Structure formats: C-alpha cells, structure tokens
Length: 364
Image (cartoon, rainbow, N blue to C red; front, top):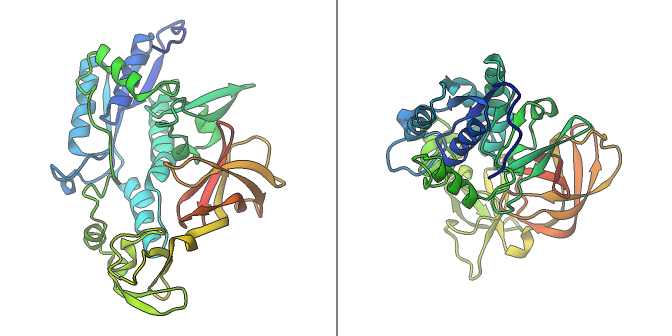
C-alpha cells in the first residue's frame, strides 16, 4: 500500500468521486493517512437521457448513487455539483461542432481541462481543501517546487494523455494517489477498505452517448447537419457509393462503409465542405507529419526551437519518436521518424520526454 507521512494536523483534502473504484479507493486511502476528506461529484448530463442497460459510462445515475454510498461508507461529507450547463457548453457542443466540421473530438480531455481541473478544483478550494485528488493513473513530481506531470507507473492504465491540457498552476493543487499503482492493486485496496464496488466494471464509451449510437444522438441534439448523405469517393474523385452522414465516420475506419471494390477500404479524409467521404487502401493512411493547434505547453523551458520528443496520437497507442517544431505560440509541426497510421484531425497529440508530459495540442 502506498503511504505518505500523515499530516501534522488533520488537514482537509477533497476527492472527486466518480462512482468508480479508483476514486473511491483514493478517498479511502487519504482517509487512512489521516486527512479530513470531503467527496465531490459532478452531475454532468441529463440523467433522464441515460437509460438502464445502455452501457457503462462515467456519469450514469447509478454512479451518483455509488459515489454517495462510498461517502456514507467512509463517513465523509458529500457534495454533488450541478455542472450540466457548463458541461454542455464546453464539452458537448464542442463534440457536436467538431463532428460537423469533419473532426474527431476527445471530450474526456476537455472535461478534465475545463470541468474537473477548473470548476471542480475551484469548488474544492472554496471548501478549504489543500488539494483535489482524483483516481487518475498519472503522477505529479515537484522539482524545485514546480509540478511536473508524469505517466502512471502501470503502462496499461496510464492516463496522462488525457491530462495534458491541465494548467501548471492547477497541477500544483492536484494529487493522483493511485499513480504508482496497478489496477489490480487498487482493487485489492478497495476490498481491504470494505468498499462495495471493488469489482465494479470500468467506465466505457462517451458518457453522454452511453449506447454508442452517435447518429441517434446527433438527431436528438438537432444536429442533422452531421447526418446528411453524400458521396463516397476514391482518391481520384470517382464516386463509389453514398455515406450516411459524415458524423458517422472517423479517419481510418474500415467497417460500415457500405461499398465493395474487391479490397478493403478505409476512410482517408472527411470533407465537410463538399460533404464527401474519401476512401482508399490502408497504406494511404500513413503520414509522417502533422500540425497541432491550441498548443498547451507544460515544460518551464519555452518551445523556441525544434526538439526531439515522443509523440502520442491516441490513448491506446504507444508514443513514437518525432521532432517538434514551433510554428507560433499556439501551433507546432510534428515530424515522425516513421510514418504513422490514421492521423485524425481533432484528436490530441501529446508530447513526452521519457515519462514526463511536455505538452500537447489538437491535430489540425
């Protein structure tokens, strides 16, 4: 069990309780170390739209109930914050607009950036907590008093990719007690603490599209612009078929295209201006360079010249050696040592120096 010196006096820590085993174990662990713990839960979406059996999400009604039960089990104060409006404005609307513009968004990163480590963190500070702790598998190390964001020890659970957009000043007020642990270790701790959800399943899918039916969600939200049929073309512009609406596709997708030419086809490009889906062979997905915008830099040394980095394109894929070249304060070019497959505009590209997160940006 990870340990830290107990506080000299009973000081206060806030924990973001999601209703899952990770955040529950975080709260129990801090309580066992002598902290006065308070639990905070975010209500992010109209739970009436999330029906039983629609899959595991991170903000389903049962999660709020589980978070409350954890607080009761541990005997700690519990606050449920209604953040549905800012969540819709900052995360859901961005998700919808991104798909309408032919981009593949990552709502979890924006939720962490704007909701969890800004609004929820501010609430924790207003309640006189010394920090906000979450169940993320990442680490924070302080060098000369400056926080550095690092990968979690368990490469299979590392979540630092989702945290690159957190501000340095906010990292100073955040803790990740599980960052040096594996999921199995967390579950064993949860069982030892007597938590009822020690074996609860992982959260899956986008929390506000729990059944994974994006087409139905777009229609329900009045975004029929993502569902307008149009041509599927090859790289020469030859029409091969008709797509069901650009919101149903992402770069690299192979299944569900509805066209047959004698060999597998993948989505190569999404062109919202012409409402076209460009498809081609798998080898045409390879790219050796990309540009990012909205560059968020965590390293204290400014990015002023081209540097070597490890660049990670998706949470589930390992980082690859690359060179990072600044183009402006908010844009940069990434050139990989070897071509990478299915680079999707709208996704995040996160830069590492070993285990340390240098920053990241959104793929143009």
